[in-house]
Image 1: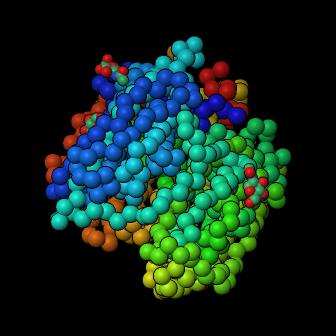
Image 2: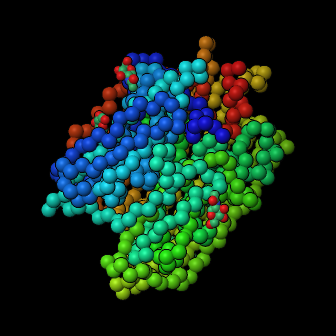
Length: 580
Ligand SMILES: *[C@@H]1O[C@H](CO)[C@@H](O)[C@H](O)[C@H]1NC(C)=O
Ligand SMILES: *[C@@H]1O[C@H](CO)[C@@H](O)[C@H](O)[C@H]1NC(C)=O
Ligand SMILES: *[C@@H]1O[C@H](CO)[C@@H](O)[C@H](O)[C@H]1NC(C)=O
Ligand SMILES: *[C@@H]1O[C@H](CO)[C@@H](O)[C@H](O)[C@H]1NC(C)=O
Ligand SMILES: *[C@@H]1O[C@H](CO)[C@@H](O)[C@H](O)[C@H]1NC(C)=O
Ligand SMILES: *[C@@H]1O[C@H](CO)[C@@H](O)[C@H](O)[C@H]1NC(C)=O
Ligand SMILES: *[C@@H]1O[C@H](CO)[C@@H](O)[C@H](O)[C@H]1NC(C)=O
Ligand SMILES: *[C@@H]1O[C@H](CO)[C@@H](O)[C@H](O)[C@H]1NC(C)=O
């Protein structure tokens, strides 16, 4: 396994000018109470220059903005700077063993970079912030000048607490937050799968509602999972042209081995990955997507006083459902209890879910070496339960999901051209006595064209070109603590990396269209484009837009000079020949 989650990504950028580059993600600012009194607390500052050494600090709740836990909101600001040459790195914050934020770093330039990962709203974790406890910020880095890796990451994490008062009521919170993690007191709290994260949960016996949030990202040989080829067609490709086990990935949540919910993950592009979206990072590389499942239908089982195992795993469409190494997974359960301390009872009235999605793999291998493969899958799940609270209330809970996936890959022209066309769509909904409580409607299309040019000997790569079209479209009501919102992010980009006398050069353009709207009327829009590292247009609007408009100083007159290149797994074999 690769030492670091994203360590073999090759998109290092060596800048040549003096000004630090400002990297950013196009997304909405957090919705926070306006006019509330705030208190900023620096949680930690740490220089990450090694592997396996997270920052571990003991947190004490501040009292300057009211009794711990009484806050109207809490946000985090994760700001990083780095100078030199370095890969992008995965980073996560775990608090009381709950992973509350997964992020990643942009790649530095020799002139330095600075970025503030969008101020993250962590209000739903107020029960954790109200108690003293251990906070772990991990960022596995390798600094080794012999490998040309010089960039250290200096990270500053601050929290802003919003005092509650009559005009700014204390935030609604869950009663108990249960971590789905490895519970390590000193190491990162996510778990590498396969095989699976299994957690024996100590569930409150008077629980009446429970909502799972899942964190999951493919790393190592699974970073470009959507490029992986179905095993049936691997033999039609040259050795090393693709990782095995196909492109379908389903993240499953299981209760005692029974599927409780399923996720078709968003294809995250880390900042050093295939797309040329620098300095505008791909969405949302700085606050990775999380997924919601209503666990309430399983409460009659979970509150029976016996041990139960909640698991997260990741499966493929192959016969044995195997995936490569690795996915990092974790999660949390937000639990609401009844006012009575008597155990909740009830029953699962109906359960309709198969262990695995229904999948098909089809393809053609032409005489000219062209290989086209399509992997598709669908999943329908429905669970209906009756929950009887100790205080007497009865709730009829219905949870249902319909998910659909298709991925078509074409390897053309002796695999010099690799095309990916992927569509993931789904609708998940729960109702409690008829009222919608969790709802997730998403559409995640992604198209990537990856083209390699070789010289007349056919042996040496002289240029690589990538064209990306990536859309995140989602209307989400994750749990009763957050209101429903709709996000639409469309990123298009293209760029090339090519040999020039004495080395390599590159270029890239990208166009981003972003909109956010929630049911309370908050809105945010942004259209921003860049050519190479220069912002060429930037329009910001909506109720959440800053009063003083964003002003982006045109940035470096940069030529991207990647030290290694744009990469897709299918081109690994050729990558090693680049510039050889
Ligand atoms: C985040 O913190 C950094 C310093 O750590 C500061 O420069 C920046 O202004 C803060 N950003 C926001 C949006 O609060
Ligand atoms: C990077 O270099 C610049 C210019 O020398 C300096 O101002 C900045 O503090 C450095 N940043 C880091 C993280 O070392
Ligand atoms: C996880 O639990 C399941 C039963 O639910 C078991 O089959 C499996 O072996 C366990 N895996 C690990 C890694 O403990
Ligand atoms: C494979 O897909 C490409 C691109 O979509 C198409 O041009 C070609 O005809 C297909 N080849 C076969 C054998 O289906
Ligand atoms: C899933 O599809 C079934 C059958 O068409 C339908 O009854 C159910 O309401 C759907 N669920 C969601 C969440 O759309
Ligand atoms: C590359 O991006 C530029 C700028 O958005 C666009 O004009 C051009 O059509 C794109 N090229 C391709 C091949 O997509
Ligand atoms: C990048 O440079 C190559 C070679 O000069 C050129 O063909 C291509 O159009 C350029 N692309 C962009 C996005 O500027
Ligand atoms: C950056 O883009 C702006 C706006 O299009 C343009 O005026 C400026 O000349 C560009 N700078 C460089 C160095 O290309």
